[in-house]
Length: 354
Image 1 (tube, rainbow, N blue to C red):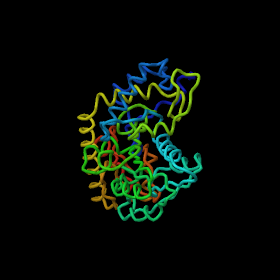
Image 2 (tube, helix red, strand yellow; image 1 turned 180 degrees about the vertical axis):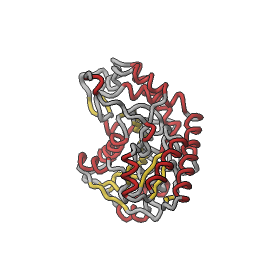
Image 3 (cartoon, rainbow, N blue to C red; image 1 turned 60 degrees about the vertical axis):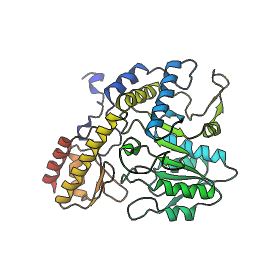
Image 4 (cartoon, one colour; image 1 turned 60 degrees about the horizontal axis):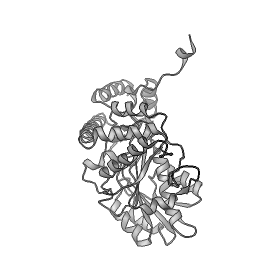
């Protein structure tokens, strides 16, 4: 066997059920390959990819209800969440804290450690959403940022964003919405979650999740340019005087892929995909309930259900890429690559291990 023949192959997605990443749209894949060597971090040297990034940010603004968006395409949700904390800290005076729900992504723990800010986690309500009263109890004059999640990683819940905005305004804090996963499905629902619905200052939205762009491709958006000013660092040896981004050299592939995916799919393609994903989530939830499992009613295309350890492990041994939540529940994310046929095969295998 040659060395090339012994190399690991890329993941086949035909049994991937718990990932929030998916196969890129063909146009996004082609664009990514074309711009592999381009660096958006040096826009004077690489003007074409810089232009694509500006257009991608405008398109992302359309997705999230922001007419004049400010931001960039970075590595993903972790970077964007860290940048939201960093911007809020930099615009505040003295020692600050960040208030987020217990359902917030673990990237906020990283951000708190890296930036040396206090992270206060508020309890959830009975529907796994941020409890507004609990958030208000933790927020004070030293709170620089209140966080809401629009599409939680575990249960796919949407926090009461407008009410969290009221809490943020009461203490003079920024409001950040983490819509890394939910941002490309929520425009087709009746949830209040975006810049048009609430006094949102910053937002995370990841094209490389439901947006069907290649990895890495994450969006950081801000309502006003002052937020980016608070992040800017001088770059004396580049043609641009300052940069607000966390990374210096960045992925031209991610930027071009995000632009291509948005150009190809927004809005009609994303609407069609949301409808398919939501129908699949409803189907799976109903089928699991019929089989006697306790299922948390889905509100976005994510299904959570109790599954005994023995059945979970047996399904993993059969090649199903599934994972558990913190409470032990099975988590199935109905991403674009998840088809009805995949779910039927999964249910057939589940029947043999019950």
